Length: 180
Image (cartoon, rainbow, N blue to C red; front, side, top):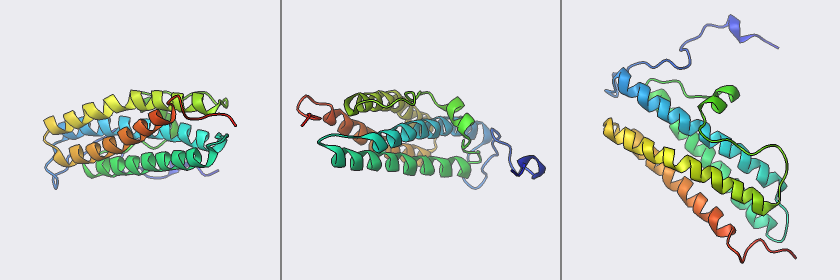
């Protein structure tokens, strides 16, 4: 295994540089990057939980739910990519390492055990419900700091996350997930 310690670091994680081209001063950039890193971390925690449920879904509605969960985790990955690109553009370093993701996340995934699909979806909805308020707060933060591009990116991610959460909620209605 190669050691990364021998390589020169271009930008230390957690540091933020002022973005002259985007006219975002260092103080505002630090606040925005911190918020974006929280949202990236939350996206990847939820991503991995959805991926797990995608692998283990069973039952009469297997294929539909299997595909739906795939769409959801792909949406999260695409959203995290947009947030990471923005964090980098405004002078920050997006969170990427597994330990750092867990440190920055405000949500916690279920354990590694396998559950029935109803329980799995309930757990997914719980994580969505915990992550969404943070995204909303970060939309407000970006607006208050005058970074309307970050605000728009966060709004787009929020809209997708809310839509997916709403669909999970529909799967949990009484007339779904019936046994054969």
